[in-house]
Image (cartoon, rainbow, N blue to C red; front, side, top):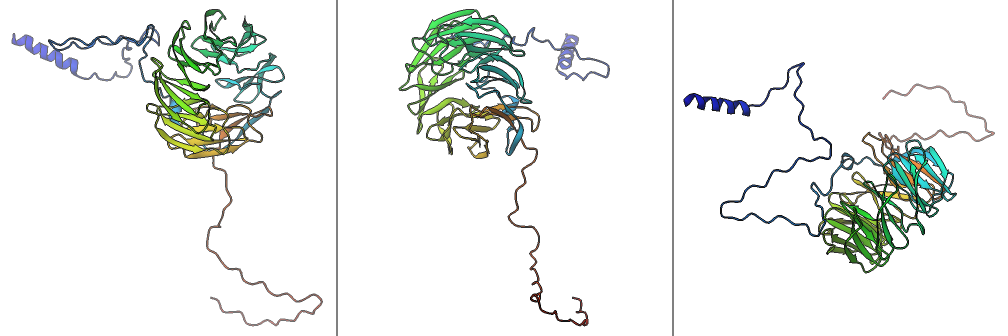
Length: 452
């Protein structure tokens, strides 16, 4: 009996002792990995309740078909923790396009895809500014990109092109065209028609999977959020629909038209022309909070881990707390904003109907820089981020058809000195010269002055 007890104690101590690192030439056995990256191990069962106490009832979804998402509501990538765009900035390249843009570009990686007023559709390399390919395809909407394809609305049809070459992959006739630009989300191509239909298309082959009628055309880009889409309509409704089949989950009616929608897994933020920013609960569409601004909101809100940022036509940039809507700060703009702000690390970039854009710090809204372009901007800004120092870029598209990349300067631009360094030494008076025509007096040499 005593021997078995000693063995048990010895085995317990051996199991609890830390393992020594492998010696040279010896490899540690590989840890077991899931068969594919998206697989998650099952969570352990909940602990049993104390004797005499009933276990809590399982948490039920708020509505049929709801899928709960695990993990944080906002995942911070390494780029979001690094403010790589700092001022001053300088030109890296400038390209004169074959024509001015008919709609804002779509960006995918280091390339931009855009329609021109000349009837061409082009692909621009954002590292060099060179046009990689061009083809005759006229469109008045921004394209969508995803799955190595770019989707263009032209001639009452949706054209799927190869990103690398611009060649046709498939074409989907769509009589009447779309009401807003197409949207790509996790393998789905979402189309909103001018007749008020919402269509889910399989992106790789163009097959229509579902089609539902919303009763009114969409007026802003749908906002994806988990397994749902949030769509703002012309009749002032905001509709939540299932991404899998387009089934409507809930709707919320605004006092005026929406300007843009942003969603996470718990809340839906809606800008409106009634001078309010609305926050709705994603699970049921109920009103959570709203904040008044001094003018119509411009574009869709944007957010980071803590705040929601909006532009409004009272020429102010505002930051609100995401959960309760408390105003964090507001900053005046010297121009009228024309689109949503964009976020690059811990900096917000704001552009408008002018030739300049300004940068603000996200923490307190402190001004972080200003840049003036040679012409008015023709599209919202785009940030091409990089982890390499001084390698991030801001892409500008001017109304005149110029596209340019701005890069952070490696060293500050030298400025003129207001005061010269060193000790101020008074100048000795200049000797008086004789008037012209007079004979100069002869000065006899005398003894040298004593040294000081």
